[in-house]
Amino acid sequence: MILTRRHFVTGATTIATALAFGQFSVQSRSLKPKKSTAKDCIFICNEDSNTLSVINPLTNQVETTINLTSFDEDARPPFRFVTGGVMPTHAAMISKPLYHGAIHIHGSAPSPDSRLLAVTGRGTSNLYLIDVETKRVIGNQLNPLAEPGKVVNSEWLSSGLLLGREPHEPTFTRNGKELWVTLRGENRIAILEVTAALSALQQGITTEVVRQYVRTIAGPAQVWFSQDGQTAFVISQKVPIVEVFEVNPDQRGFSRPKLKTRLDVRKYDPFGFTPFQKTTPDGQEIWFSHKLADAVSVRETNGSYRVLDFLALGDRARPNHLEFVENAQGKVAYVTLARVDDRSGGGVASSQVAIVDRSVSPGKRSIVSTFFTHGREAHGLWTNPENTRLYIAHEQDELPGTPAAGQTVCTVFDVSTPHKPTFIVQIPLGELELPSGKLRNKKSINLVYVRPGAPSQTA
Image (cartoon, rainbow, N blue to C red; front, side):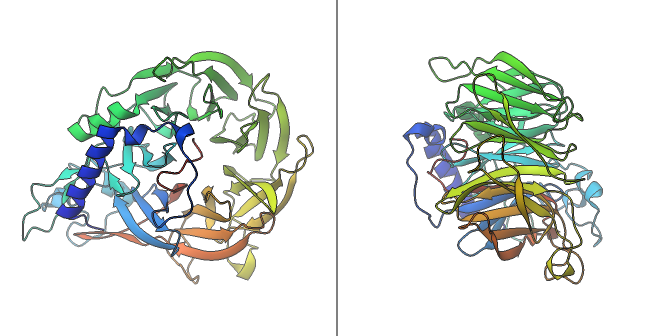
């Protein structure tokens, strides 16, 4: 989608109004769940193309692709996506002269009120904020070169907010006032005040926006907060340790982090490679994916943080993300497996998702079954608020001879009966249409389902 002047003016007005009335920092506990609306959408981070695919869950089709590349802001060759009619490789794309777009779009998380989406660029060491309703990058500006007859994008892309080396995952605090972003290439977390970050983006300020840095273990991969917002869990992809911080908010709700304890997880993750964690809907447990150990572990979120379960997933299962589904028909945890198996239905290679029955008492839980994702190298997954639909992102493209050959796909499942997911559709992510050509959306990582104004899973 190429944004017009009308899109720009509408988006800018929406954001300015939101800033004025504090719309983007709503206290999560004041929110009430809302029913499905036409504004619901799924955002997918495409790491190789540096784009965001936006899927409409009512149609199960790509509604638009958000451009984070900065291509075609100028008609001259160094700025163009295609030069001399030759399609550049990925490495050539992001190494082009004067390219200032995103590199390796990877992590994402919604704000507690589901009105903002935070997205990290691993290779550019920065963070972008997306207005969920307008589906606009906050801080983009009207392109002065977008004159009649000039084939260029109508906007200049924001450079985002510069944070530090290898920002992996962003996480909003439960009160929505801050963003904690793990810097996986360092040993610290960048903490931003959300309102100040929005203001900086609107003014085109990209540096010196971090409220504070917190020293952590090496290679911090992600932060997740306890349900009451008082505790922060920090995992690592370099050392087998989980750090637990007291958030210790002041009277205004801004954190004053204090290290509470370090949990030695060598028994469960001897490789020290834990990329993802999430608390259960009741807030009583926190689940960790140990990718190189091919396992998942579960701990209490309070007390001594004792281990409740350790679940082996099989040789080279390579677990990525976790998601929980609870409805009248069951209570399960889903774990995406990166491994690609050739024995899936129809003879087409596919990854699997492991199912854990969470109605069983802690200490007795196990992998009860798996199902094929209808895509290769499953990564991010997220459910709708009703816990009836599951959306799964994939890193690899589909194979020749398959319906979506050459495309990265999102797959959708009916999980009304959580133990027996039913495949609904495979959604090819298509391309971003740039003035100079089509850029294929490629290598999907994080995926989130958002319903503007309703409490998200970070609330």
